[in-house]
Image (cartoon, rainbow over all chains, first blue to last red; front, side, top):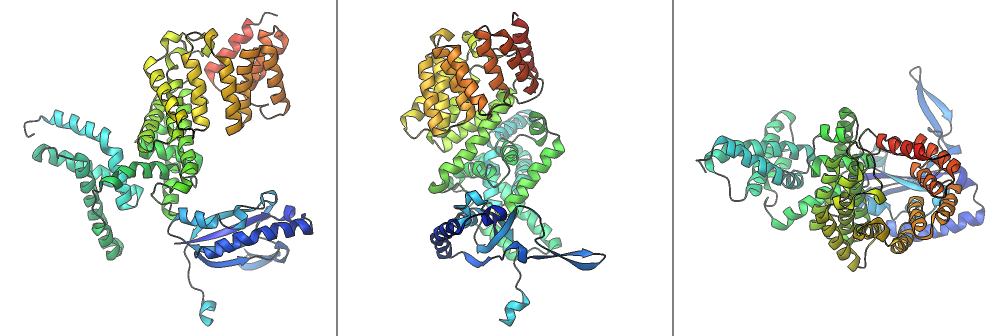
Length: 128
Length: 414
């Protein structure tokens, strides 16, 4: 069974961190990231560009309509996601808890949402 | 047994249902991997017993019989439905061929699996309580809704959602491994204590207590203590028994609240106190105790005092100090302040309570204002007492508590 793990952060608070503060946080992430990778459960990992690089598309009068910015205007935004393979929710939680966002960054709103998913193979994958 | 009358057989079956239905259900959930299927299978199994036992006699191991009958009926049902739903044949065979239904150890653990699954922290706290009462205690949706003053459709919806989350997110049917056990046990204990408290000091409504819920919580606590004798599980059971022992003494015949110091202690239930005290000792001697055992120890000090003046307040303050270290909270601090007032006088208590209120943590907590009022009353500061009782009154949602506070207000002299 596969689970999508969405790593959230408070963009405003994170952007307000000084360079040394960001560096300190990032340097602490490495060990956790490694532990997560070594778990052998990861299918896919990705980190997201900033929300200012985001474009949202909604239907308007039956046509796709574009707006600048993230879909939901909330203070918590998705900063990264990963997909993991696990037998059940307990195992998924055990693995996801190794991610830095489950242990660090409390002051900048880090956290993870774990959600079961059904995956289908995309055609771009097959092009290789 | 063919000589048994239908009435006797019916009574026998009812007794077996009461004693075994939850255990049979717990095992069926493991074997069938689905709550709804298991519940249906449980009903089918008892229906089969009603038909066959009068004819063939009661089996030597009724529980094993019910489990295999339920399992057989469920697989049969899935097969029949599969013809319409084009369900995977392999899946059905896998279900049918799985390990023998009767494995002693696995079966003993099934009830624990059920308890831990129902109070899984991935479920909402409301759902944990509802699901535990429904599945582990066997209360009907209507009974639970009534006990929590919730409309039955809302409660039914809550249970349906919890079951679909278990299925869709695949919450496993298992007892957590050692590393997770303490944390997961906390969640189970919290559910049990919540049920107890709702029965002991109902948060709203016209009646002060709902004894049925407390009884269920104690039954659950006892079961957990037998299945998993961890110190805090024992401590919680002790705490509930020691509170419960005062039930008859804490309300007047007209349903009014009677404070601990005014209770007729001859009406305390000695049997529950004796059991509670033994359990407290057992939990304390483990040296791995936590907040429930400490609260039970405080209740035990009260239980051991033949009259209020004989209460060892110094010991109670000391226990609150330990509790503050283990699990600090403003409410514990407030309780400690009240105990300190009994040891050092109301002036000292008032200073502590005002310090807590000044931080704003408990400014909307009715009992903080009631405690402040009581200190002022004992110090003869009637105007301050009046203001605090009035503030407490605006915050209470419970009828007997309102009457108590109004009574206190009326007694103030100037």
